[in-house]
Length: 121
Length: 106
Image 1 (cartoon, each protein chain N blue to C red):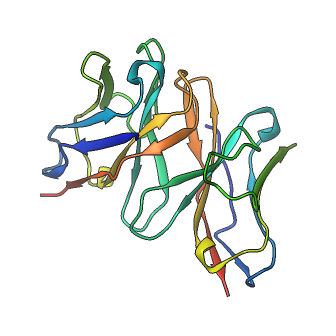
Image 2: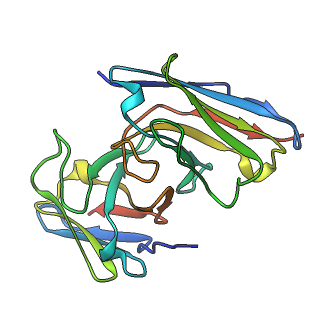
C-alpha cells in the first residue's frame, strides 16, 4: 500500500524559513517523480514543485521560484521542500504526491494527507 | 505561463450525464488528467493520460482530449460523485492545474 506522510508544517512568521518532509513507503521510491502541491484555505490546487526520479529534472511554479527548493533522498525514501522568505500567501495545506512516471512533468497517482503551513505574524 | 480554464460549477440530476470541460491552448497536444476531491479529503486521480482509469475507478467515469479542450464525463451520475474536480496538464518539468469545478448532483 502506497503511503505518503508529510511533516514539518506549522505557524511561521513572514520572512522566515520552514522545511517540509514527506516519508514514502509501499513503492519503489527511486522509480518515480515526486511533487509538492498546495491548497490555500477554500481555494483550488496549485502545483508548487516537482522532481524527477534521479533529481535530474526539477520544476517550480513561478510563485515560488527562487524561494523554495525541492530535493529528495532516495536512500531514505524521502522528499523535502525547503521554503524560505515565506509570505502570507504561502499559507496552505501542502500535499506530497507521487508521480505516475519517472519524469518531473507527469500526473500524481497518490497523495498524502497534507501538512498545514500558516504564515502569520 | 500556460493556463487551464474550467467552469466554476456544473449541476446534474441523478442518473444523468455530467460533462466538465478544461480548456487550454493546444491542450490536445499534451496529456491531461483529472482529480476528484471531496470535502476534507485529499485529491484522488480518476483519469490520466487523457482516457485511462486507475484501478478502482468505475467505468462510468471517462475522459477525452482533443483540440483545445479536455472533457471529463460521468455517466449515470450518483450522489457520491458530488465533489470538486480538477484537470491537470504538464509540459517538460512544469505542471499546471485548472481552477476546479464543483459538481453538484441535484
